[in-house]
Amino acid sequence: MRKNIFLYKKREEKVDFNLEYDSKTGKECEEEIKLTKVNSDVRLNKKYAQNVFSLPKNADIVLRDFKIHANGKEYSAFLLACDGLAGSDTINECILKPFMYMKNSHPKENMKLEDIIFETLLPQAQAKKITDINMLCELVNFGFGAVFADTIEVGFLIDLKRWEHRPVNAPQNEKVILGPHEGFNEMLRTNTGLIRKTINNSNLIMENVELGKKSKTIASIAYIKGVTNENIVNEVKFRCKNINADYIFTSQDLEQFIEDNPFSPSPQILSTERPDRVCKALVQGKVAIIVSGSPNVLVVPATFLDFTKTAEDEYLRYPYAVLIRIIRLLAIFLTLFASAIFIAVTNYHQDLILTDILFSIESSRKLVPFPSIIEIILMELAFELIKEAGVRVPGPIGQTLGIVGGIILGQAAVEANVVSPIMIIIVAVTGLSSYIIPNYSFSFAFRILRFAYIFGASVGGFLGILTVFFMHLTVLFSLKSFGVSYTSPIAPKNAKNPIVSMFIVPLWKKERRPEYLKPESEFKQGKISREWMYKKR
View 1 (cartoon, one colour):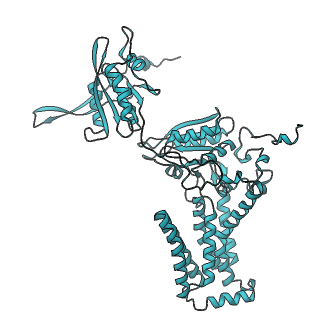
View 2: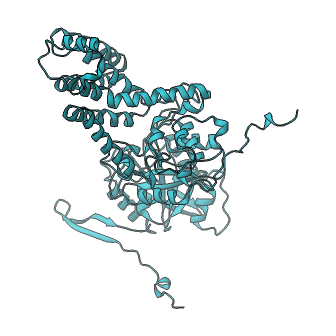
View 3: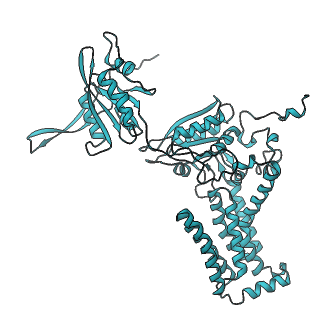
């Protein structure tokens, strides 16, 4: 076997000095030092760190010089950390005091300085030796500290993270009715801890990946080994590792980079603030992506029916859950079709309306100067303006603005004969139905598509609605979410009872994991889960 001769050649450190003449002092001055590895001369390491962090301009970067006494000698050293990300008390008690006073340190004779520092002076649980000086400087931006000492060609990476963050509170955007009142916050390890605390299984895997070439945002890919299909896990890791972007800060940024169809109105990745919902998805065989600095966790793959469910659906008793699911599907239907059907019936299919109702509609629209399509678009846009204004202003004021603004605007429009009263009712029913849809991004999709159905109804009546509906279904059936059909398990049919999947199945009847995920473990509970009914007392 041919040996690589370069393995036996000692790699030489390249140190570049760009020297310029200083007219004031009459001496040459060093401007830039280029290093790839930690140099044995601590002065070069210090100069390189000052250049990287633009010191002393950067006021929040701490560079602290100190001396180390070991083996009867004195060595120069310095600490590099970021104030605000690293705790000052931790730096003082766990770094500077042990190094400067060598408390409780009893090194052996002729022990190397590198071993003395790593084995006797670093009390932190997370401490590493790293030779790459660029990696050390990058990790300082994540709350780590870097210690450099003279005559040593390694740097010591120390975990000093202690920044301000929100405590674990109830989710802000997902109302908790039943279930744990815990929500994710912006701390990565807090979020992963909430998931691991609930699942409590050694097969739960949390793989770290870096997002953004410059931001180096840490994200964890969570899945259960032996349950989740490896192809889905590999696809998630492949997409996350092959994003050519400098900065990715939040899970919403990541979602736009890794989703299959960015131009589709329907979201293909589920975003949630609730740990219990993420844990239930992981148990089913899905993958979760937790991004540092974001309180929303992404769950993939996601299907159309996943966006119509809430975490409370499995906490409710079966009869209540079925009723809520039917109401939710009815709300989706009304959001899409209520305004369009009214336009189609009044413009093209008057024979379907009872005579008394037809006369009532005609009399209410007698003084309205606009055609029905203009009338309903004006009201829909006004409703969207009120809704958006209510979201952007502070909470109590937003609720008042939505209610009062809607009443005043609707009453003024009717009295001014701009719109008819029946149109106000139709728009109000459509708007309220959109609020029932549990997922915010999913409701946005229907709010956009509602205008397409209105346009189709104004052009061709029921035929126009069916044309838009056919195009809508074609798009939905063509969508994929990480290799899984968006309309699973309805189409393609990959479940034994696809119609039943649209409704809630009792918890004790959910023996199988979703077949469209192709999990490695098909069953998550026994066929007879309520064994107490068949056992003798």
